[in-house]
Length: 166
Image 1 (tube, one colour):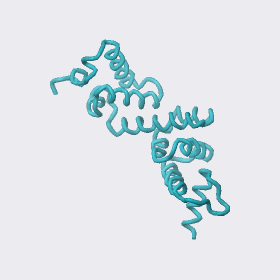
Image 2 (cartoon, rainbow, N blue to C red):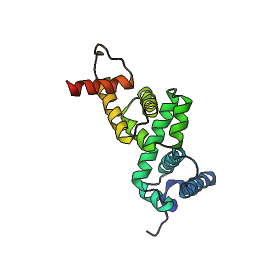
Image 3 (cartoon, helix red, strand yellow):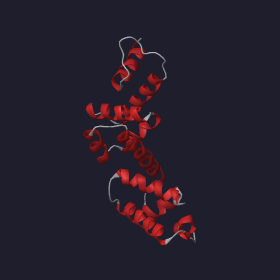
Image 4 (cartoon, rainbow, N blue to C red):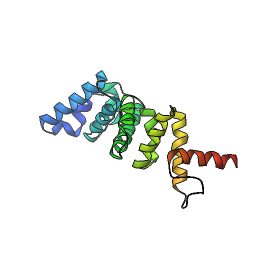
């Protein structure tokens, strides 16, 4: 490739302040500075500036699959915070858990906050998170609550287990 990604991006013709921001994002990603949420936000910003996943990979070393995971998980994290997730949940998932939050992409904003709290409370892993998200999604599609169950993440999982056992 003879052109650098920077030269082929729309930001090449943008004012120099945008070029500096793009360069700062690339440098930050290359050095893995900040949190994984910031990495996801940086990847999204670079894509909005005209970079594609391959360009970002060549400039930063973040593989496309990793870019997708942290970008989507950062959006989930932000929506979870906006839904009022507790400080404990926000703090925990800011440090780690992009793989877990990625699984919650199929849930609503408020469901994401509840699911994250459930994961943290029971120290569950990414496979468990996938099952929790699936159970919550399925449970949310029921019109009426089954007697004995509430609309909480724990009951969503319990209902799925009850259904499987029956």
